Length: 445
Ligand SMILES: [Zn+2]
Image: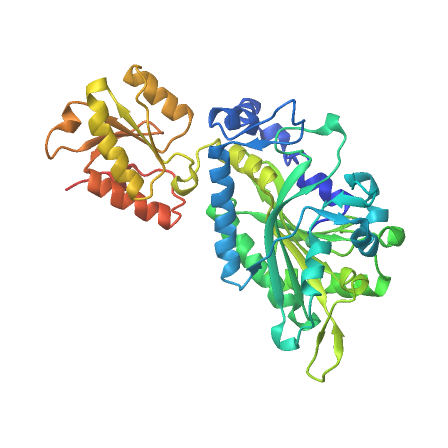
């Protein structure tokens, strides 16, 4: 997915695309800066030795990446996507065929082998994926073929432009390519659109605006393919957006190198607009790589490609999500879902038994057995936005007594351990998006 320069700027570029900056509370915005939250929650770091623009994801940050990816994958697998895996480098021949070696030259990281052969780090996955499709001939009965892969791509940027997770050199795309017949375009687009709707609604991005990113006929030479091919592709997208009743607008000059796109714009909780998901129609790479299927009449039929990414890039989506939520993630996505706080050393052993029970149930749990005041431990847990802080003292250790739970938003309540575990497991496995659990976790019996 995504190989034109414009697209690159948007996906790995600035998060903010101000809608109405006058309405914005700048203090609020500063508090929500993903770099600040990322540090408080210990999600990612940078090293001078590794280089700027190359984020290193900590164990907690990696949990978030994996959970997000799994969520997208669960939505995709309902529509019969299959995972594929490709190497991160390629011979230059692949990009000469795709046209990227010429049109994308400045952004390519080049690698030379010991015998002077030229390779490149992949700046996109589409050309590699075409070669998986092309490994054999496909009957029309096997179409569409839907490949998905979450993987890093690398694009050279001016080092002065790198910033946090929003502008990076190593970009993780939740990428996919559907290889299908002309007659299947609409269905496949609508399926991806459903995934996008479900995914963004889950996080409270209710208003998705759709930009029809078309080519600019005045600069036809910039693009791959003929005006006729572009007309067919853009008409198809117009029709799909109309049928879907989308809140959409056309933007000439915003297309990818190989075809027009539907770009989705989400408005966050403080009114800023971000480009997030994308679906792109491509009639050109199938020409360049001579991709076809065998149709009902036994003839070779040219196919089309649909590129899509739900999160766009995991780096950018994480930044958008952290700023949208101010770091208050739903339980299922929280790297630490519960932390046990023994008040004194004599409570450690009992705390350990509670820890084991939660861990066995699949809850991501920690114990804070530091020699600190309880109030300090609670403060630390809240700064890290941990959904549940479980306090263990003399009272909680009495037979048949309830646990005391402090939520990150500051309410205190009590629950039997079994009841708490049941509720947590249920909320985690159903990916409950509700952020405030106080009432239904409380054991009223
Ligand atoms: Zn692609």
